[in-house]
Length: 69
Image 1 (cartoon, rainbow, N blue to C red):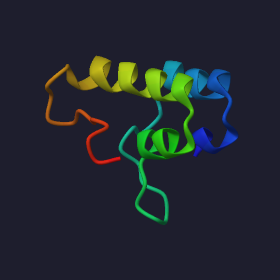
Image 2 (cartoon, rainbow, N blue to C red; image 1 turned 45 degrees about the horizontal axis):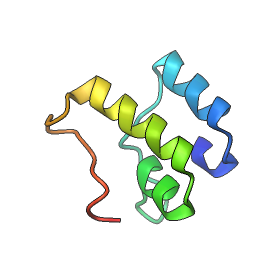
Image 3 (cartoon, one colour; image 1 turned 120 degrees about the horizontal axis):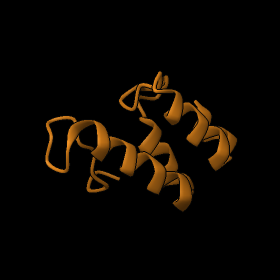
């Protein structure tokens, strides 16, 4: 996952291309947002939350929150 790179520009590029699965999970079951939160990558957390809101709306069924992290 691009989050592991810790490079906001790489994450932003993937989000802009529109071929990123925001709900993808790694082998441990973590989503990109979960990894960013646990890693303390605040800029990437912001990018992912904004993208998630854009794709599913602020209260959409696919919205991710930080509550579980």
